[in-house]
Each structure stands twice: as structure tokens, then as C-alpha cells.
Length: 469
Ligand code: ADP
Image 1 (cartoon, rainbow, N blue to C red):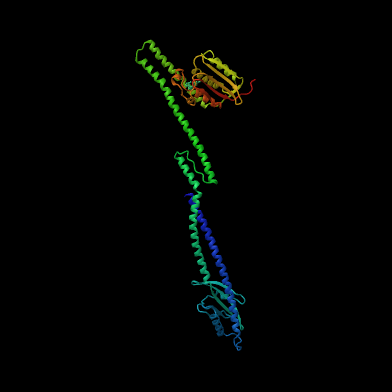
Image 2: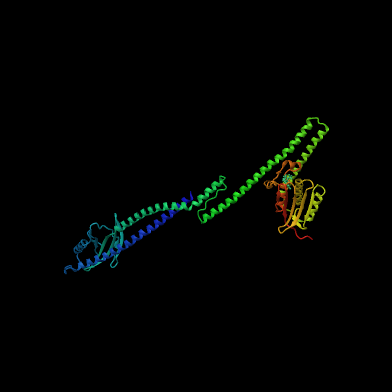
């Protein structure tokens, strides 16, 4: 069942109960008050009748010492006629409670008569067919006789008014309920609008429209819910975008990987086929075997690099205090003299928090790239400087540089700005990808500054280690 319908239904139930009870209480209160008034009047009338009877009895001739029955009847008939246009309904009984006179239509049981005693006035409310009466009973003291006088006062109007009151209230209740339903439908629809907007947003998002946001139309709890929902949607959208980017990167990686495998494998298969299907002279056989060997080596190097990247991506940081001298000494030993380059090593003493072999790998890759990008005899500067943020390593060359639009791509696996140049120098586009993974373990990033034709500077900052002894 819809929420707005539930609100509507409960409101109707509460309204119906409230109107029903209040109506019943009100009509009944009016009825009770009127009836009480009528009973009061009936009792007064009963006393007046008794008094009138006693007064009439005073004028009985002196020869009677006791009021005779026929005089009782006479007085009663006079009293009956003296009533309203409809005539009074009364009954007179003697000391033994035998009826002496009864008006036409006064056919009553003796229950009240039996309860009435001298100086005890009684009443009851009775229904005779469709009419209601206040039945009163009193005693009359007339000429040495105690007589019982009963009177009926018609109070049907009070009961009719009550019935009319109930019927009117029922109509009012129905009209109020009908009007209430219309108004509450409007209100509940307005109140639940934020919920409907939220539902719409969830549907749109489930259908793939992650940028869709629910409109906030109120400042209450539902407004807060909409705000929270929208911030959740924001976070979700960002995560989905990230996942999509990751999937795209993986697909790109797979494509590039397949491509990089294909080139050396085609060469290997081609030369191997030549070797087995033709009788080649010694020089050509040697050349073919050499191609197969170098391409095979390239494949081996590539798979080792890939393995390194995967391992680095999963590695837990085992950072230790590393004096920078150790790193620079290693680099000097490795590069100076072995390459036809002009190396300049310049560093401030200090220590870093690092995994020494991984950091050596990063710097070897960067220096290797700098060598590949430079002409023979080119200047390559490797520097280390302490700053407030940490210890910064940098490798600068004055070689071919990298065009600006390429700079953000070169850290992707298998990406090479100039493929044939990179391959001729044994490149596979994996070195910088490995550097990025290693630096991630060190909570650091690769910074690239480069200008085509001017040269490049690759740098990164590591956390400083403690004071050196
Ligand atoms: P590889 O060197 O094996 O090709 P890298 O991931 O180390 O792979 O580098 C990717 C590409 O970035 C290189 O092919 C090259 O085009 C470019 N690059 C890297 N370093 C430099 C540099 N110092 N100067 C110019 N280009 C560079």
C-alpha cells in the first residue's frame, strides 16, 4: 500500500473516531440535560396536581367525614380536563392501591405504584409503543384519605430530538470525512512528494543514470534524507567512474600487452620457420639465430618487468633508514664509465625511509631513460636535496624531451612516445610504470618536467630518515 494512502487511511480512521465520539457525547449530553429538565417539570406538575386535588377535596359537603370514591373520580376527571389541549393522563388509586380513576389510554403496570409511599415521590421513564413518558407517582392527603396520584408526561420530543441529533451528526461526520479525505489527499501527496522524488532518483540510478540527483524540496527530515541520498549518489558515481577508468586501463593494458607480445613473437616464428624450412648458409643461420635470441631476450626482459610491476603493486612497505650516500655510490659505480655520458652527481647528505633495492630500481630506470633520450656524451645530472617536505631525488637530462600532450601517458604500461626509437634502445614502455608502482609503496609520486627538444627532469620526494650518526 502506498505511503500517502496509509497516511490518508489513518487520518480518516482517527477523524471518524474523533467525530463519532464527540458527536455521540455532545448529542447525548444535550439529551440528558433536556430529559433531566423534563423530569423536573413532571415532578413539579405531579406536586401541583396533588395540591390541586387536595384543594378540590376541601369543598366536599360537610356531611362526608371521608372523601367518597365518586367525588375522587369527579375531581380526577376535572383535573384531567384542566390539562393541556391533549388532556392529562392520570390515575388515582386508593389506600389499598386499587385504581379508582384512570384516564383513557393510561394502561400501566403497577410497578411504580407499588414503590410510591407517603412522602416518597417516585418517577420512571417508560416507552409505550413509539411514545416516551415520564411516569410520576405521589400521594395525596384528602379528607382522611391517603390516595395515590400517578401522572404521565409525554417526553417523546426529547427522544425525537436525540434521534435527529444523531442523524444530523452522522451527516455532518460524513461531509467532514469527505472534505477531510480531499484535503488530506492533497496534504499527504505534498508531504510524500520528497519520497516520490527519491524513488524516481533510485529508479533512474538503477537504470544507469548515475549523474541523476533527487530534487530537494523541503528542509525537514525528508530534505535531510534527500541531501544524504545525493551525497551517497555522488560518492557512488565517483567510485563507478574510478572503476570504469580502472577497467579501461586494464583493457588498454591487455591490448598493449598483446601487441608487444606479437611483434617479437612474429619475428621469432618467422626466423625459426626460415631455419627449419630452408637450408641457409652459415652467416644467414647465425643471423636468424641471433634475431631469435635477442627477441627472446626482449620477451624475457619484458615478462620480468611485468612481474616486477605486479609484485611491486602488491608489496607491503618494508621501509628502513637508508643513508643517501649508499644509493648514490651504487649509481655512480653502475653508470660512470659504462655509458658514454657526462654524469654529474650532486647530493646533500641525509637519510630516507625507503626500501633500498626498490629505490635503486627507480633511479636506475630514470637514469637509463635519460641516457636513451640523450645523444652520446650528453649531460645527465642526478641530484639529492633535503627540503621541509622530505628528501628529493631528481634526474635531469638535456635530450629529446617529451611533448606536453604525451607527458601524462608515459607512465602507462607499454606506452612509448616513439615506439621504434624506444624498441631500438631495448625499451618496452614498462620502466616508468614500475617506478610509479614502487613510489606508491613509498607514498610518493613521480614528478615530470619536460620540454620537447630541451630535455626532461624526473623527480620524487621520499620521507626523511632520522639524523645520521
Ligand atoms: P622504456 O624506456 O622501456 O621505453 P619507460 O616506461 O621507461 O619505457 O618510458 C616510457 C616512454 O617515455 C619511453 O619510451 C620514452 O618515449 C618516454 N621517456 C621516458 N623517459 C624519458 C626521458 N628522460 N626523455 C624523453 N622521453 C622519455
